[in-house]
Image 1 (cartoon, rainbow, N blue to C red):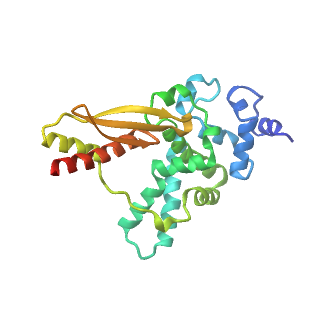
Image 2 (image 1 turned 30 degrees about the vertical axis):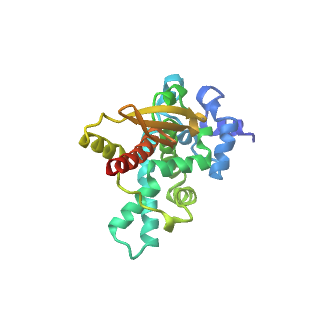
Image 3 (image 1 turned 60 degrees about the vertical axis):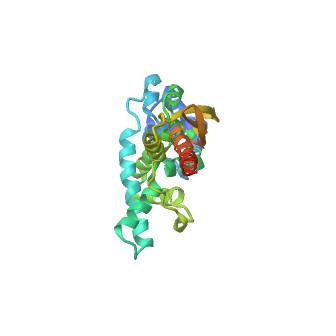
Length: 255
């Protein structure tokens, strides 16, 4: 039985519109990623349907947001259990911080890149261009909605296996807790204390495809360039620029 015949059999739908999206290459990639043929393909199609796509779809009436909610709960359960068992001497604070590193947007986006999820997501490109996080946020949310679909289709054990494979790094013990510092806030405060103008952030460049953008941003104070930062979204690039500017301005004020 070919892929389309199987698709028609399990969905009861003919080849049209949104289901047609998954009748060819997307369906092959999905099966390859999962390692099995879904029992309920409609769950997975919904998992890959961003709300922006609904503006141009005739068949799908709901986005992946509910599945994202469910997948988030399953993800936190599995990661929480894993950490609980692997760090028997650690307290609640340590486990909570460790889990946050494994389930935050950056971790989800990284996992999405490894899985090449951007090749499966149904979305409107106009949405990408109007949102700072762009494809990063969409793909991160899609990981959670996919976990939700797996859970409903195949149960907790399959979801557990999927999460363990894609979301738990081998070098778990080497994860470094990020410093709790908002360099944009610190730079603004330092500028105000020294009666300087507000920092101004300018976009220098935006490169790469939708699913892997790379931003370069510079920060100016009193019309002087104080720092440049790069990152996969504007917020990260701005924080890195602010960090460099904060260090540079602090040294200038000390001299």
